Length: 619
Ligand code: SF4
Image 1 (cartoon, rainbow, N blue to C red):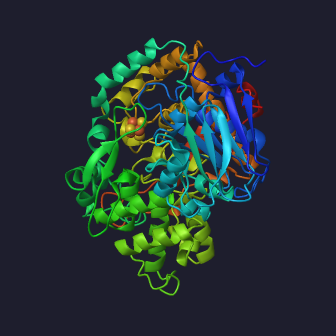
Image 2 (spheres, rainbow, N blue to C red; image 1 turned 90 degrees about the vertical axis):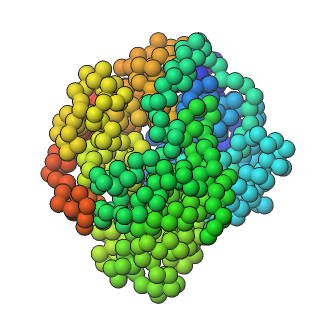
Image 3 (cartoon, rainbow, N blue to C red; image 1 turned 180 degrees about the vertical axis):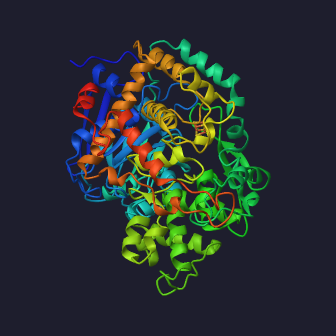
């Protein structure tokens, strides 16, 4: 008989095999839950344990895993998220993405901690999970529909307007390698092509509804932390007032804004597309996730020259930069439309924007011509071209079929000098942040198992001056602040500590925007689960997960040589403050090796040492 968790978990895994239409329920025990915690920890464990080497990411043997953490669904800001993972069709390494909204909290109330989807349905289906029950339903009538139509149709046919839907649009169905999975209409499991994995399984959506509040061992510390967050909203006041993108003008001034495929530094139109301008112009409200008082999600409405449906929310910073400055576009209405289209079609806006910027630079350098683009003048600043490409990519039509493969594959097909314009690591297009300003982030782009991911990364600029992050690091004995340029041993140690905290948050599946300290997280985990956890134990869990993601990628053939930045980051920008500033490749290589050492991996190969694997008790 499996031992039940004291709180925080349902103790149940739902396994769904779409090839034979069989659903089954497995139980978990405390030793498993406490060792991997949830979210990113669960996803990594199941992918490491259950996927064979060389699994085809878009084949039936890949597994799509939805995972919650012990805090999911408890009444605390940031607790409504879920993690999704699979082998990535974009990188062919591990992919995991965390997503907000309400779906995660609803799945917890429906009675499951994990859903593992295996196989491939013969015809389009969707999954309906409610109060401990699960069934596979026909989705033939939903195939081809956008996200809003899909959600509305499912709610209508199941007669429940409050059920939550995670779904793919046409980009996922058409196996665009950077298709995402949408929770509701504007929360995105964006990175690594998880929507294509779902599309390859003929799985259109997962609808959930539940009525069982998650068990909490001791609710008083949860209430206290919720009150603390309400009293300390000033720590995240920019998110409350503007959402993401409040500091875009400062980003541009500091050289931290990607401009025209990370090539340039100066972007005169920046004020037109920043979050404060959005607030003053097209914003009609703010929205948020389950139980969260921050409410950082913009809702925008545009009637001309494009119609933008407010139901799809509004553009986040990453979208404003990826489709905006990085494509040389400062037309806010066009960016709002681009954001809406990506959400409706389930396209990752970061990869989509970076791939479009890549294509624009190829076009401007004669590597693509109007013959390749069906007459589209694919130049930086052409917002109509950007919007058209989103449509073509989502449907894999014309040039969109090539670009749907992602920048790395497209550059190999285009050949010539295209590689120089593909800003990606391990195949994942870079998040909209600049390693030439933040070398610690550059190290993160290099060694992150997902590729150039900005989420599980150190943003050097956040560890300068007086703020809660700096105070927490000082409290943990890490001497801060650092200079921005520093990429020596202390910065690497800071990177490792921050990375561990972020993986911990991704395993608890708590929003990274919330200013919770290690200590607060530990207290609330202990209160919810009833375990006597410690910060040391939680950090060790994070270290185990990080090392397992490394092992997964090594099994797939990745080596230390894949931990490298694209050439662009070692070139000066054409203008702006970074016009005469370069990253030092030797210093970054040294930092990478030092990071391997700190992780207990071989300094030269980056392979985890057997004694480290044994110490972390990795199966
Ligand atoms: S801070 Fe924003 S993204 Fe995070 S949980 Fe709250 S509303 Fe959602």
